[in-house]
Length: 405
Image 1: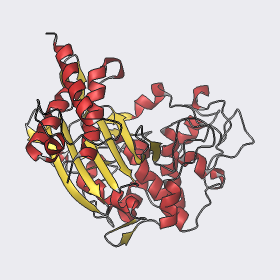
Image 2 (image 1 turned 60 degrees about the horizontal axis):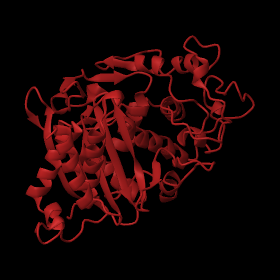
Image 3 (image 1 turned 180 degrees about the vertical axis):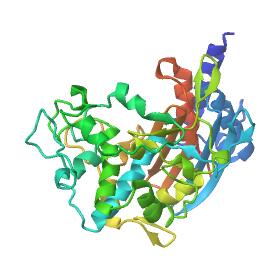
């Protein structure tokens, strides 16, 4: 039988068993089969087998994951090799590039300054920037902090031809970033400007996901706090939360414990060099482990506090996790956090991430105060992703929510 057909049959079986409308595994399958699915998920050996089989379909060489209940990390584990060439096994303390999960921390940094009363959410960001930020199509409409944080600033989807230039091997220091590069990229007279930077949308009215908006947020953190962005996060988020293996700079982490970013293409894993991000630094360059990131997520799940350490006011956390969309569209986004209602009617708050060599997810369900973090180190080019791979990846992420602790 064709391998693709066999793969689809296996995946269809797992989907049929595990993902019925209640999002709960049935207590028992047909007696002729004699397999208790709940026990299969609860049994560590069988559960690990599920994950490892699915990883092959999903083309993920490694996964590091954890489960949180309330204010406690209750389970964590690593699967596969985070460095294939050296046969290094993933663990809960393995460090991964997180891509857009970084935005949740960047937003938290800015909202700490909001907690101090240093700006208002609906204040014009031009009150702080050394240049004028305006959509040329709507020059009289101010762009506010709330708009940037909720992807409603009217910045268009990223100009990939220019953004791709920001992926630099290693972690070089670039003295002209973020300023004056951001001015050159965002203003009509700038050397890096393109008309595709801005949309026709009126600022504040439509959702358009844009990475460069969070580059601006990182720069605003520097301007308002007077500290380098990465150092600010280290001083006010990472160290207070004991996230000692976390940084926006590659040079700050233990590279021997850092997952190699792989691209799966034409049936093979091709390693990328570890890279820094110039333009998208504060939008996606944070590296961390599931253990470290669990401290941050627990704080957000519990009113801004982890083990007695408060990083945000409870009212500010609620504000960040609230829908801030202003139209009737399907996109829902808070302030730096994705806010979604899944197909089972349950609210999920968090973020995902995907860039060359990385695919990550972090989300929690307020209804039962359960959260999952899963970090992986592979991404298949969009034009090569198959239905099987996409489905297997989704099942892996959702299996952790179904796991019985």
